[in-house]
Length: 602
Image: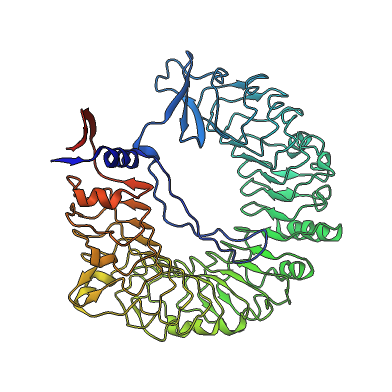
């Protein structure tokens, strides 16, 4: 089919269709209100980076290839032909982006001068270079703008020269993850305060250190370091006073090691005594059991620790003896995968200021401590059952007694939602009910969630029969801004009984991917005046011949992986104000004929 348009409109549409714009937004929400919070749930993305080839910015004879992506990052890697391996950083490449990745090369040594032309790079990652043995001193001396540097999975890199990081006066984050490093003492010489005066975060995860002596961190005396990560480092012994030089340390992640509990207790006790003011402590997978290690909570009670991570330890039953000491400073508690089967209603009595509680991947059938958490705003109950397990009972959980702002029950089996399940939760802003095996939501069940901004109902079974009834499931959600309805086998948004989305008058993001929708019409979106983003990818959508988004202000639209075979005039008019579009259209030919420009879609 051939569609003829005016020259100006056609030019505008061409720009739209060929534009490469990445849409990415995250939910802005800080549940624990401190510097060390759990991960923020990320909003659905629309990304088109792989649809078009990266821009080539350099190729050298010995096999290195560099490409630039949308003026965001540059990546240099080994070219396909291993007979000519990339063995030296391509110094002739002009890197115009602030992010540089050096990945999967055969470079054995990074020599002084290799990075002299990278003065504008702010974030650099050296990843998966199996043969990298050595980094010469002063190699980073001209990279004064670098704030983040990562060496990841370079297993042949066993040590660093004391002057390796000279010149990195603005470096804040250093990630040395899964390399061949084995000596803290040799490493700390490279991290002196006069070399890295602004170092804030040091990540040493997945190296093998085994023993940490009293003086291993001594060269870092006076360092500005606030966060130290040594997870899965095979540590068996740690001297009680080893952290003494790190006076500003606020976050310590030392889980998944083999440290004897008494040694760990002594180290934490000594650190507290010498004035190290820890705020976050990660002891995941450390072999703790409910009643055996009461002394840990005694230390926490005496400290200013506000975030405690005990994931993958053993707490079968959470009762009034689990947390025996009054811990008013504790704000965030992570009990992911601790085999918890029940929670006593007095379990959290000694945690009066807890705001974030993560209980994902346990075996709970309901949440039984609602009344003892007056300040809790963030509750994660993901994966407490599965589609083959028992049911999680919302009514017994009594969420209506709480001041929650974030609640996630993803992958927790609910089946049926009734009016009394949530009651009135006037502060709730984000509700995640993805993969909950929900068959039905009674009318008015969500009506008490008047401040809800984000609702995720993906991958359930609610909508397979919704068109048979006049449902009011979204009534009361007039302030909702984002809704995710993907994977629900929805066939239509409008029936003779009514419009599915009619109450969502402030909706800005609509996620409908992976359904069975064939047709959309103006009526489907008539009340959605604030709608900005629509993802209706992976459906059975056909081309439409009448305007659909006539009264909407859509900015971004994803209609990829559908049955659209051509672009109609109505579709082009719908698209003319978009800043982003992702389509299944495979071939786009543009020619010029005197006064007419035309697009042919095959």
